[in-house]
Length: 156
Image (cartoon, rainbow, N blue to C red; front, side, top):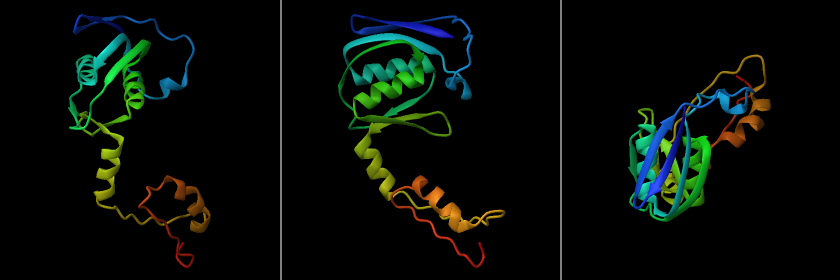
């Protein structure tokens, strides 16, 4: 499914048209394909852009208090979620979708501050068919800055 959008005055008009199936498989097909969007914004408030993506995707969104800015963008037939990420990244913003499909948009600094106060989760794994000490180097880059990893050689 593909869509087209056009900025008309201060309003944004969206319409959806069928897209051609991709003939060659791509990496994008590894996850569920999102509908494509083609849209242009010229000096539009970020709140209007987020509202357009929310309307197009059918997903709920919550905009953080510190989310502000002006967007100028030209998107041509890109998956809507990739287009949203690109626009937010250019504005220094991030979007996090929770398990219910609600998209929370906030400033990167605010998100990092929130993650710094969230509780730490402790998980213990018993390793079979490999030495825990060997896996420690592989897992360490996946941890958050507050995370840590240790291996007990006696119990693996």
